[in-house]
Image (tube, rainbow, N blue to C red; front, side, top):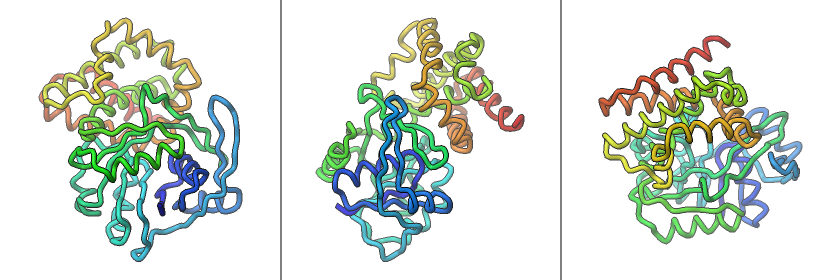
Length: 316
């Protein structure tokens, strides 16, 4: 299979390197300084927990041309970057399948219009991390929490989505197929956006968050409000195991979040990502605000955290 990974940030670098090591014909699209880094030094990966480092010399390009022909394009960029790359994806009509692994709680009509409904596939990464001085420090999330998740637009478990899932599994990623990716994405933002906003409210410091009972209380209230929005709009919590976030007593949820926010795991996949991707976090928070307003459900805690997020940027 001939694969293009569009985007050379943390996730694009990680997935491209794993595909390459597994023997796939993969090219990584990078630009500017990142292109130069990979051309000169390869993709440098370092396990955030293990500290193990490896270098992978993945073929790299700077553009997607209209005549390029790939079996699969995997789009791994921030949500606020997608609009800028849709024209090049639209102009390329020869590539057979385009998999967007991007935060998107607002729906897929623009993506479908740009690349064609028949080519559009949906997904979400099961990893996170940071990049500094050309080194990608990554962590692959436990499949019990968040495997690499893939879906057809209409939710069917087709042979092609199963085949693509096998590509990811061969590359070392646990996978899951989802029958309602829009609900999955809305559920994801319903709890991830409050967490990101709470981090910013604590000054961009997860450990500081762990020492702020007021913010932990506000965070848990925000998650409860977000899930109330989902219920009002009849959006199923997906995956269903996330119902536990609001099913357990609030004091217990606060305790879990307090302990998690102290850890290096939280620092890698939550705090550092939030700081590096503020533009995306702002967009997601605004998107969920729009969803909440449509539900006509009171969300005072969610609104307050959203304001903290806006205030954090203005103070920097």
